[in-house]
View 1 (cartoon, rainbow, N blue to C red):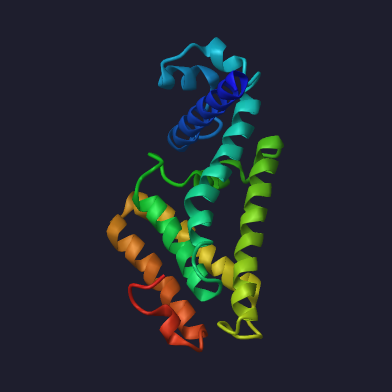
View 2 (cartoon, one colour):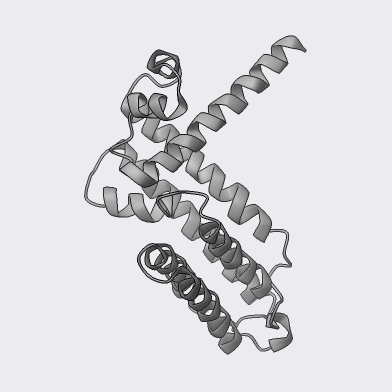
Length: 212
């Protein structure tokens, strides 16, 4: 039991450190992230962190993985509690916008930022980010297909295109909200998806105001 407790505490500490790394990366960039800078932000010794991550690249990869887990916990998991179909698609988008609006990450969306930072820089970090984007795209497409299978979206729908449109609304909200009026940006992002789904869904009662 004592050993299990130490492991659990160690896991919690590692997660807390990586949460700080994710937040810091949105401010200084993933390439700007370093063990020294992270240690300074946490008020701990660099040597203590070096025991977990032997290089800057190892820290960057672990930070990407933690950002993925954070996204799953705060965005995907809440959405999956909504009924399958268009309501789940709307819930997913709402959870994403709420995550941005809460300003959990000081520099904006981790993935929107790192996509621009690494889109022309080959290597393990870009590969890990590409894997994360691929899984997110596949997840979106799966939820769209579920709505099609339920008859809540047209049978001849271009599934990848709608998944792309949903993601584009999210990315635009993430970027525009940092430079323009965030309230208007988030309102437009929400209304944009709602309008798109209403135009496609044969049952408007599934997308009533105040329902997600």
